[in-house]
Length: 254
Ligand SMILES: [Zn+2]
Ligand SMILES: [Zn+2]
Image 1: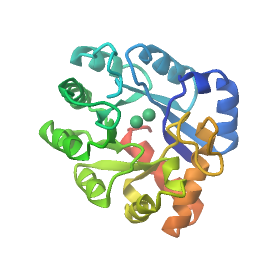
Image 2: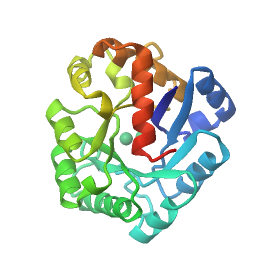
Image 3: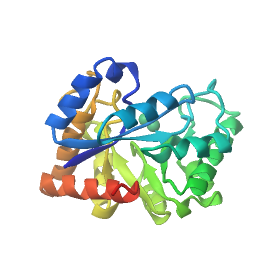
Image 4: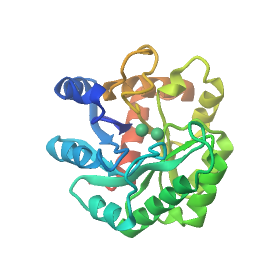
C-alpha cells in the first residue's frame, strides 16, 4: 500500500477528470490520499469530496498565499474540523517567497490554525517557503508539539527537519526530490528516520520525473517513493509500508 499525504483533488486540473484520477491512483496501488483545502471557498468541496470517496481524507485550512481569502476564525475552523473524514488542519504556515512584508496577517492566520489544531487534537499540515525560522518560532510559541503534524513538500535543510522532528513533526517529500537540481534535498531525504517519513505529490503541481511538465496526480506518488527508496538504499516495498504506517498513525486513521 502507498498513500499520497498531500494533494489538491478539488483544483480544476484534477476535478475535471476525478474518476480517471481515482482509477489511475488505485491502479498504481495508492490506496489513500489527503485532499488539502486552501481557502474557505474550497473547504466544503474538499470535505464533501472526501466524504464521497473511499480512502480520501480531508484537511481544513486557508493557505498562506491566499491574500484575499476570507479569513477563517478559530470557531469556524474548529467546527469544520469536526466533520466526518477531516483528519488535519491546513495547509497553513508561512510563505515569504511570493509575498512581501507586511505579512502580520499571514503570521496571525498561522497562529489561528495552530490554535484550532490544539483545540481539536488534529495534526497540522505545514507549508513553509523562505520562512523556516519564523515558521519554527511560531510553532514553538503556539505549542504545536501538542498536536504535531507534517512539514509538507519539504525543501529545507537537515537542521530545519531536525527542529521540526523534535516538535513531533513528520517530513514529507514531493516530486521535487526527483528533480535533477535537488541534490542537496536528496541528501536531507537520505537521513530522515523511517518513522518520520511521508510522501506526497502536491498534485496538480510538481509532477515528478519522468512526468515533468504534465499536470501531476496522486498515482505518481509511486515515482516519488521509488526515488526515495533508491537514495535511501531501501526496498521500495519497505518505503511504501513505512510511509503508509506513518500516515495512518499521524492522522489517527484506524
Ligand atoms: Zn504547500
Ligand atoms: Zn498544497
